[in-house]
Length: 391
Ligand code: NAD
Image (cartoon, helix red, strand yellow):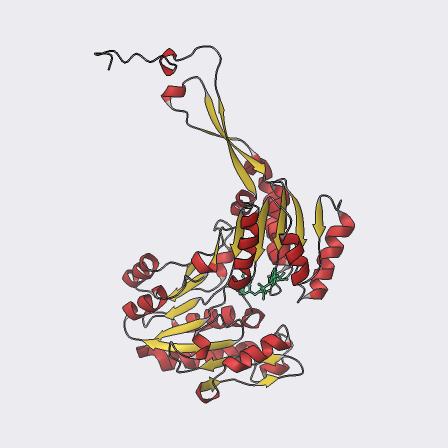
């Protein structure tokens, strides 16, 4: 669903729409240029570099690649070294089936990335952490190469008192536990209204059990953590005293059970950086102003989720906060709505893609004015008549 399914959808979209997307688009021409016509012509940038992360290692390389080649570019992709099996498959698909001067997979780690970034590409599309995003942008700046940066961050999820708690619990648990929390748009932490706090937490825990049973570590459908470094990082974030659910782990198999931490404060260790694992810290609130203030005091998130039936509060959250994307009464699924461009803002990234936006990302919009050769506006040319009374 999240790796091959997403990618196939994007390829289908490109095949079905390429003629329309690649067409010159005629726009209005002002009276002053009468007789001429104005067009916007999408043209490929040239050779693009696509650097991918490990958490959806196939989709996050192949989906942008589909748009890059639909837009007419050559491309080099650099899959993540932390998911070497998938990187190997990407290399096999690309390097064995295509002319390698057209598209090429360059497998390797940071050194390979650095070598690639030292070359002059015509566009760089990077998905990964905000820290490395800065390095990529710095390298791109040396060659004045335009970039898309698809980064991460802490995406808040707010549960209002006025909502359907069963649906909220299911949709939040699903979004958080998908790929074991290792999803850039996973709800990172929860703000739950004080009046429904206990009832909601109970439902969240019950949902987790309904999904993965009472011993999720042994459940084959429940994912593992990518490697030991991330496993240890996650354990160090879990404040044992405040675990109200889960907190179990299996070091051998790199598994951490769904874990709920309550209470936490804004100063808790787990509230400082993106969690990227199956651990849900919960804070409570009374007034939506507190939540809006908290979010606005921090870097702009990649996603924001608000569960509420109250139109006024929904409007306020939409108008008074900024984030890459938003779901009202859902999590993660905004990225599956084909007409919506997906991307971050501020520290969570720049630029966007998916569907039409992918094609546009990899196309330079060349402006073309076609003038006629039949008549000319004499007053355009010097010498100008500046005599009194002329104007
Ligand atoms: P990462 O930044 O560590 O690595 C991503 C890529 O950059 C890899 O291919 C890696 O080889 C390369 N890289 C790492 N260090 C580098 C350096 N110093 N110089 C040049 N290249 C370097 O990210 P990750 O751990 O693979 O992915 C997790 C992060 O990605 C999370 O923050 C997550 O939120 C974010 N992410 C964002 C999206 C999105 O669409 N916005 C999607 C998935 C993941």
